[in-house]
Image 1: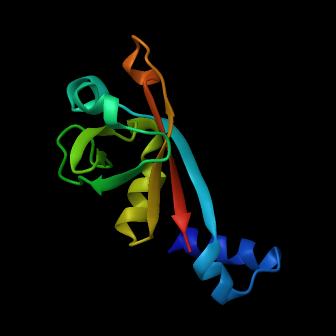
Image 2: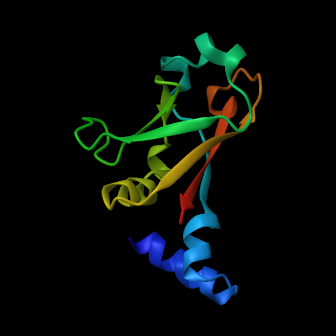
Length: 125
């Protein structure tokens, strides 16, 4: 709820009413490369993924490699993870029940798997 309170305060400072803010405010939380894509379905679904496609963020608190792990899926297919160095805020927001939305923000054919897919995470009010 920490993100929601901050966003609501920002909306009020910008002159957006609480009811309007709840319907219209989308705040960028972070932009990240997709981690681990070489191990999951990115190569298989690459021709179908488009900029702006919605991604699903799923917490994995029992992940043996990272207790703050957040899995990234596209249409039910695992693509990878939020990078470990950048997953703390997203994991906390999901644990707190915040409404987050993730979207594909960049696609490029690159031999480096860390440069192939980038995504943005938004807090929705």
